[in-house]
Length: 135
Image 1 (tube, rainbow, N blue to C red):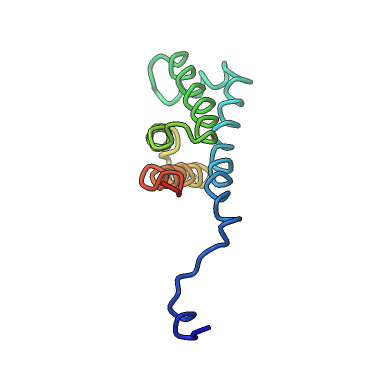
Image 2: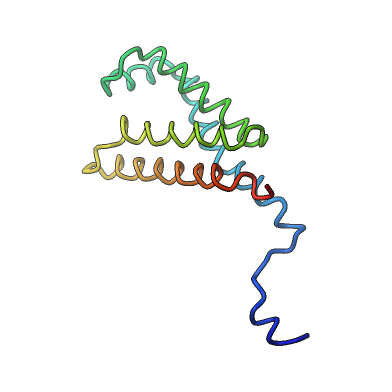
């Protein structure tokens, strides 16, 4: 083996592992959307009260929209179908959620939730830009 080649060759993962990483990543990030949607289904009245307390109109419509985006978006994200479009919707949803529900940055809990949502949007934008990693 030429040592010059070894020093300049880019680091890569074994293809056996690397081909599963995009799916594993999508499963991990989809979990938060799916669990959040399921929790809204489990307590719709509490969620509608929270939506109303944020001053948003039509809490029932907002609840239905959030459940659909989170549950359907999460499942479709895992499946890989229309990946870039789904990731774009989830990125916008995450940013809207951060701005409407977690913008009280003086409250440490809200600060954490705000930047969690911003980070989730960042992950979704990576998918928008790069697809499933094999495109």
